[in-house]
Image 1 (cartoon, rainbow, N blue to C red):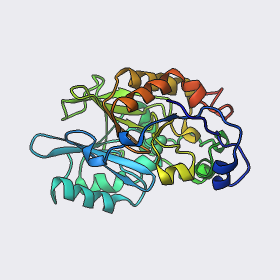
Image 2 (cartoon, protein in one colour):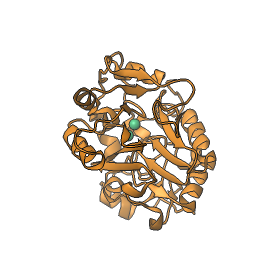
Image 3 (cartoon, rainbow, N blue to C red):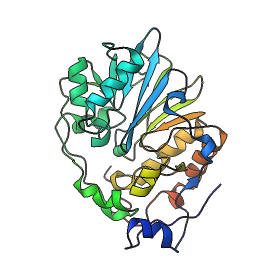
Length: 299
Ligand SMILES: [Zn+2]
Ligand SMILES: [Zn+2]
């Protein structure tokens, strides 16, 4: 099911943009509200939390071992520790942390959390330069449109975090260390070393920024969080062909439940169908018409 929407390269303010934009073409796949689920009911032994505009998740197994997936914005460590204590017991540190990628909104609190819990942090090998203080990410592209969040993206911190003493590379086999029911899937495009997590027995997907269920470039959409299927956050995505291939790989898994890095967790057939539509029509729906990385990927 599609609705038409404006991709927002209007000069008008964000609210007026929504009300007034007449030029409409496809930029999302709509999803019924009924497919939105609470973070706590994403799936068995999976829980999550939204802090401002970004989601984190935790996976659990056995008698209380758990892993944190992503670490939110800088200075979120106190909030995350409180949430973890509530869910997993005070003093029950995770076995490890896994980063879907190292952008500041997913790795912002990783140094503080890894330090206080004394745990390793797993990343894809291609993400290493960005989490060991070696290299900044390519600069974001505010010209890809979509509103305030995109226009502000030039102000987002870009300098790499440095977790050299904690970082571990994910094993080639696709195994998620210590969590046998899960596997990681390389889903590049948004970043070179971006990964998503999948659990086959109930087809649960933790997607990172491979796609969003809100229009992440738009402040209003981020604030209201209506369920819609969009591509990855455009201002940070540096290889659109790879991003399309990654969405196609995830859609082929036909996830039952999906937890994105931005937007609401979703479950059900409509959500899976919306992801399939996004995969089929990725270039029309998600790829910006213009932009620094649209024709010249960095990879
Ligand atoms: Zn990102
Ligand atoms: Zn993000």
